[in-house]
Image (cartoon, rainbow, N blue to C red):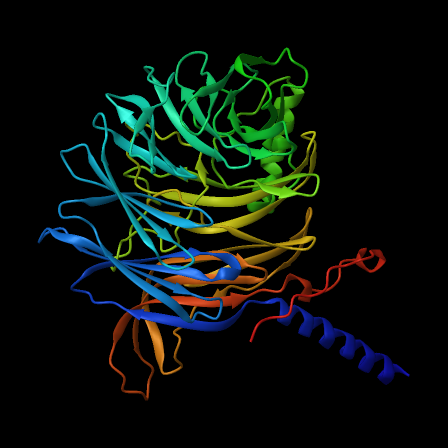
Length: 548
C-alpha cells in the first residue's frame, strides 16, 4: 500500500514537473544577417503581428560623408523573406525621426544647417516607396514625429519654445498649431486619436502651479478644446488616451506631489469629446480625477527583498499615521494602454537616472553601441521632451508593474515584475507583455538571457529560470553580444534580436564571425499548472498550439 502511494505521488510530481517545463520559452527558428566591423551598419526590427516583421538594414559612413542607405526586408511569421526594397537618402541628409502604424513606415530626415527635410513612406504590405520633401518655416529642433492619415506632425522647439506643425502629404502645405508657442512650456507627448481623427498635444509647464494641459486639434491643426489641469491636488506628469465610447475617452498617466518628474502614483480621468472650448479641471469637480498612490498598490514593492519591503511599508504607514504623505522618487516609462472588455490595463517600467560619478553608473559595452534593435512606437516617457535636459550617465531599471482599471476608474488589481540590474543609455521600453486569455506573460532580455513571469490578475503563477540566447549553430558559441532586445510578437510568440560575435566550439574549425540575429520564441501561458480556483471556471480558453 505504501509503495502504491509513493508511486502515485511520484507520478503526480512528474506530471507537474513536465507541465512547468512546457511553460518555459522555446526557440523555434532563427535567421542571421552578417555584419562587418569596418562598416557603420545597424539593424532594426518592426514587428507586424501575424503579418510577420520588417527588418531594416541601415548603412552609413559619416566620416566619408556617404549618403545613408537602407534595405527593407519583409519576412513572414516563419521568418521567410517576402520582399526586399532598397533606398538611399538624398545627399547631405541625415535621418532624424521614425514612425510606424499598421500600414506604413515613415522615415524623416533633415539637411543640417538648413530648414529642408525629406520623408519616405514605405508600404508595409508590398514595399512601395513614396518620397516627400519640403522646407520648414523655421529651424526646429525636432523631438517628436507622428503621422495620421495623410498628415505628418512634427514637434520640437524654436528658441526654447514648443512648436507643432502639420505637413500635408497631399499638397505639401504646412500649418503651425496655435496656442503652443509659450515660454517655459515643455512638450510631453503627441497622442494620435485615429478613432475620432483628433490630435492631442500634452504640455507641462515648470512653474509654481505646474499646470498640465491637454490641447486637442482637428487633423489639419484647427483647435477643438483646451483642458487645463491647474487646480488639481497633484501635478500631472504624463498622459495616454484610450477611447471608451463614441463621446468619451480615458486619460491615464502618472503624477507627482510637486513640480518634479518623480512619480507618486497613477491618475485616471475622463475626456468628453462632444465638448469644445476651454475648460479648467479642479479637484472641486467630484468626478474629475482619481489618484492611485503607489502605496495603495498591493504588489508595487515586490521588487524589494522581504526585509527592505517591510521597512518601506512601515515607513509609509508611519507617515500616514502622522497625517503626512510619503514622497516617492520613482520615474516611469508608461506603455500604450491595453483595452479590456470593460476597462484598461496600464503597464509601466520604473527606473532612475545615474549621474556621472555614481558607483553603479552605466558603462556601455566596448563592442557596438547603436540604437535599440526593436523599433518601438507608442511609449511615453515621464521625462518631458525638453529643449534642454540635464546630462545623465545612463538609467537603471528596478521593476515593471501592471494595473487594471474599469471604465469608472476603479482599480481592480495590480502586479509586479522585478528587474535585476538592467541599465541603458536612454530610457526605452524593456519589458514586453503577451496577453493570453486571462493570463499575461511579462518578459525582458538582459545579458543574453530572457526573464519571464506568468501572472493571472494579482497572482504570480510561475517565474522561470533565465532562458539563454545561444548561437544559432551548435558548432559555435557566443563570445560577445550587444544591443539585445525582446518584443511580444503575436499570440504566444516573441522575437529576440541583437548582435553577436561567434567563435567555434571546441573541436570545430569554423571562422569567427559577427552577425545580427532574429530568433522566434514561444511561451504558452496555458501550459502552466492550473490555479486553485481554475477548475471551477467555465469556458477556459484552449491552449494555443505552437507553429511548426
